[in-house]
Image (cartoon, rainbow, N blue to C red):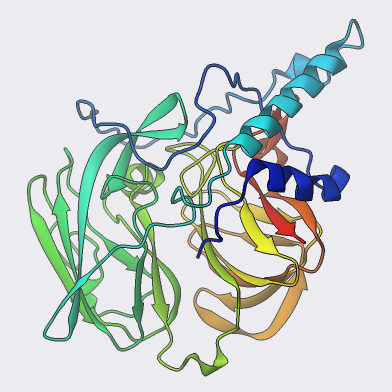
Length: 366
């Protein structure tokens, strides 16, 4: 759920309230790349050859060891400050709540009471930031893939078309399905070979925040983008929290780099909220590393783990999310300002060149 567009002037006004609450930057050249981040993939190029397994991408933003603490000579600190500020300006100039960063719903059609979704697996070049495209694998041309949302008790049919240059499959992670629909090649089904299609069909039984992803050559395919949110809303919504916004945050790390919803800071997007709002954030870790997600200034109330209600909700400011885990939290936007929001493994978020990778913000407007 997105807020109405916010102007840069309004953002700067509320950001000034935060003072030091948000100090973010990155080593970028704003004149060399567009200011606005977009969610669309660039036109596909000749498909890349598959690799056996991706290797964690080197952090191109991290400073060399000798530069981690700039030498106390000349004005090295001024250059560091300049790079931090440059990243902030790119982030602010690129704010666009309508650009799809917070999820693109997958439309479905209905036949005889069955909700029908279609996915097409493709090799693409995906822009993690403008001017920097990486070899990726996408559902319907975007990373993460479109969000599938339905209600507990719905019968769903998911038709998967494979246009990639290697076989694949789809596993509905955390979803209770018949064994034949579990999506694991040579255990429950044949692989979906290039040029082929496969149909999954089941009735949803367990509500919650779930995921769908490849389960064939998964280290490469999942890390390169064959991931998406699969959200089953409960049939009885009387116990659901009342919120002003519902945001899904998919974490990834190796194949396309350190990203939030397929983008790297400063080309991520903030959550825009009003003072007094309560918002829901659904974390989904599709990477191969643990990511402790830290929100400045606003505590997180953990209410669900892997789609199941926790016995006793609890507060935290840093939530450790392991690969495959999902957490739902409620954030009470009780204090105005722009609040930094990032992975607290610092090599995933900040260097002498500024912040990068798994960083965004929650902006609470008065």
